[in-house]
Image (tube, helix red, strand yellow):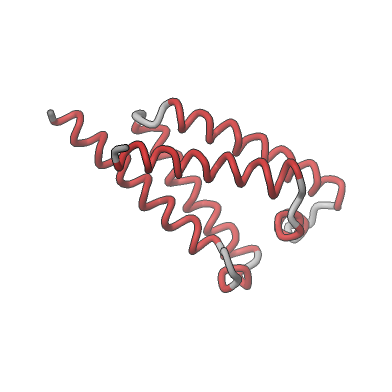
Length: 125
């Protein structure tokens, strides 16, 4: 399997997994904490979290299918940076917890840059 396919699978799986397990199947307390810390009620936080899970699953599928789209890969990178900044502003203490956005988002951004680099090389050939 090529490094491009490995990057494709890992990046897509990350979106898919983070949409399904901590948001759709079982809402992780930290997920609800982040939306509730903005000031939303528990009910609204629940629906925002579920909606975010659906969006993440859909984006994971889109990325898996259209991994050769520069726009999709760039949206992925910007979304990961945005989510990292969101946590840094809203719940900065989470950045020092185990399995935090630094240890998840930055490696996924790195794999996304591999995909982006491959797109550049492919277009130059």
